[in-house]
Length: 566
Image (cartoon, rainbow, N blue to C red):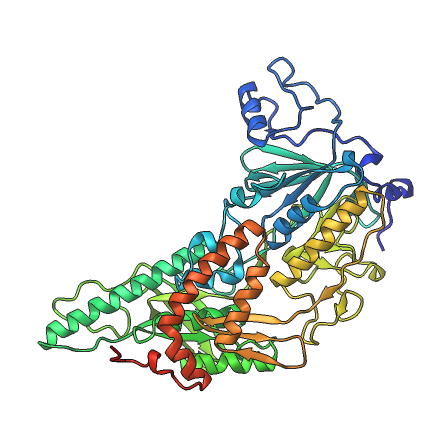
């Protein structure tokens, strides 16, 4: 168990914001003292400091005066955990107006990304604004301030040393941005999340030649690669027809998806539907097969959909290397005198091992990567880590262990067991952290949006409680099922009751409705509802015959093809 060097200082760690004066206003200031006064002024204007903040050329190098004003809460990361924590804090009622905090959200991107719907950008059934609205638009009706920047360092104030060599903190601190600007806080919420990350040590070249799906830029890149594959197939068919002196079919292109987990299966299903008849899709999974941690009913529904879409699943495989293609012509594309170099910008060579057999090397037009997660909080940040996952260890209240004014939520957080006495101790959420126990397959809280949603509510409440001298609430996870997309009108939803699973168009509609409800603001929700109703009407007119057929419903006469009604 960690023992504070001073018990008096340790007791101070749970005090609320008014227990001691904060040091400075929420302002962006130059990291280097020698920075010029105009730079200081520009930085202050860009973050709209409170009225108590002043700066001039004559006192630029002087120590700042103690800050006197409302508490400053800074949230790092604008994903589900961070954005929803900020919105919840802004919406809470503060009986003591002096305790209402100044809220600042820091994120490197311009847009919030609703990650479960990135697949709709890959198949281009939605626009960027629907899946990734800008922070400026989302936060316009609120008092939350948005600062765009990469976090270079987190500096805690009032460091508390521990006997095991670690450190804690009992007060605020400073966020240093890569631009050199700083943002000071009294209370901090870390919600930077995780990202799909290729491990170059295990599979060289995967970072340079494979395409992940974790950000808006990744989705745009994959959508562009899909358009390239479609265009290349049409060129191949035109060239083959010209060579044959008439109509002729072209060899299909090839796409590989590495990773048989939930995200890999979703991506394989979406890509296979989009490129039907134009490219073959191969899904590479481990020896455990596809979706080993998912409910059996959902896994079976996904397998049926992949089979129907023609996806080749290679179970028991391991990617060894991804590299530049060895020739100008992808495997399977015919070479003709009139053919041009058919290699696409996204083309790559994948070397893999299948079971105990020797490795094989094949060329693909696109290699999609859906393996591995990287915690976005660098190890240099002064917070305790879980040894196995490298996530930040928190108490059950989501407060970072040893840091009285820091909370962590979402994928970056690892809820620890205080009784274990170790910052890296694991805890089974089926015990004390789950109000409605999740399935036994979880030995840790799943890295899903629904966990981040729920933790955001608790984090906001516990910050409010800390500032209001109220007791903190321990996080209780309520598992509400699992949803996955498998196509435009295909999805599989595992209900939180036994092994009940819905699939097909009904599940797709339920998924859309659930995500509409979970959108961050009422304004964005209303815009989406209008857009989706219009899209739904168009899609129904186009896809209704196929959907009704899949459901076994007789096709009405007015929907029958070649209907010659007057």
